[in-house]
Image (cartoon, rainbow, N blue to C red; front, side):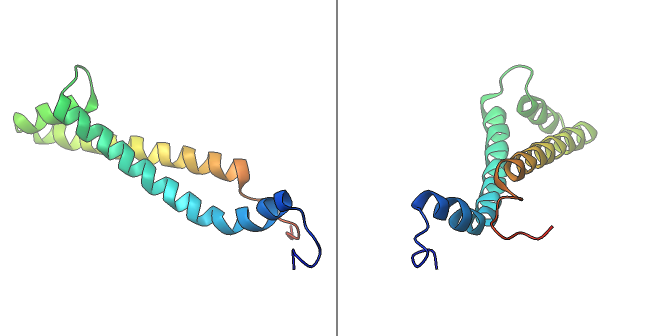
Length: 105
């Protein structure tokens, strides 16, 4: 249809390809953010820098401080979920809704 009506290439990208790709892009970004956050904490556990979440997590594990270990794990999960929600809101605000040609409101 876009070829028949000679829609320019940049409009094809904006109105056809971007809405079709956005669910997959959002899903991939959420997965990548989660893996990046987990690998960052794992790197902190291995490197043990001063005053980091990973160092405190490793210390709690070494000294068998179960309450502290669960508290640090819960804080990691909460921080990761907050970053995920922020990323999702930024992505939907940047190119999510309201940009399709025939969207009903």
